[in-house]
Image (cartoon, rainbow, N blue to C red; front, side):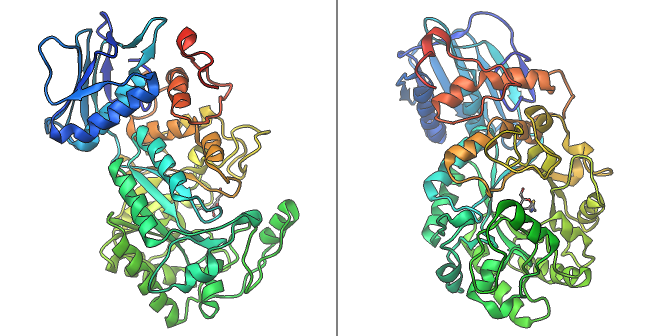
Length: 520
Ligand code: TNX
């Protein structure tokens, strides 16, 4: 399959050779009522990619060139089969998600010739490696309106991601309206990093995001970060929070990036972490958590509730362990499966079945792997987000205007690609791994263009880690194959309005005579 322009690489693909399918205004898209959403998605995708407006029909006339979409219930969840030859193209899938993914692959296969648009003759049998394939968006450090989140959902779904993790709360702001605790958004949502404007999602807006995600086969995982990253809570409920702990790290961030030290009663607009905490030994804290977690769970149809647990640097180990026991139990009591960052693995009281999100390095340091293994020992599994590979907020070049560098400096495309989920935490293989997630923290990110510039193309490497067979399992799962395939997606991304960074590590294709000058 090496030369097919598909990212993430499919589980199985072959090119039998022979003449391609030629796309023209006379091509019809065929699908019954079950396939209607996928037919509409394909129609839009083809129009954006080629400008052609194809008709869609319930059944094809004899001999007509068609793109046929069908849910035939064959195969595993999210799987699809794509067949293309000169006469027709068919996509058959196990379910609606699989058909949606088949449509995305079809969109990637469309190639410009001098005269027309073609789809090469191929046979693809595809299914995901991991059930959980996430992207995380931090809407707390900077706030993004619903349209921007919708755009990020569309970008991620096209790469076969199926989870949107929203980091909804942090020191800099509380971004979700709660009826049980209206003071959170009334008093702690209007600001963001660097004096930028904040904001929050009303409950209807949150539902809109969930619905748009669902229409793209994505589940929303809300995160309420606890017990640290809670300075915003202190603006609404000062009695629940400890005073800021002004560590050397906090002072250093202020020296390096400017801004003020965190102060009780004032919004925090800087980039330091680890200075805030809820009061661990006050029952009012747990009444607050019961309200907040209960309401967020009720608003959220998906099965997970993320309660953070990272960087509680001002909290003693014993207090932290006790808090994690109580908070994971409260999250589980809502009927959801709790997720925490991997630090919470240090707590012997972790609720059984809690999922751990590992954000250490590809080669673990400081015992991060011990903490990660603890989740599996407690009956849970891991989500892998190795920071030095798929933290999309890391700089892709030393002189990049956006991004951070704490995760071992610059993260090139090659470094984002060359790792495997089953090789990160010793002793944990695919059976202990729920999936892979690529976070985008937004300290330096203010717009959709900023998101695009940092995320693309490295988000495609994360997609491949989440969906495709293991790294080096075949010649398709190598950096050389990936850089050729991802380079071929340049014209598609450009047509979709994605302002990706043209990393010099990759040869970016253009549409040649057909497309030159039509996009920049
Ligand atoms: C670490 S990763 C954090 C975040 C920052 C991020 C910036 C994690 C669980 N915590 O608070 O935004 O680094 O890269």
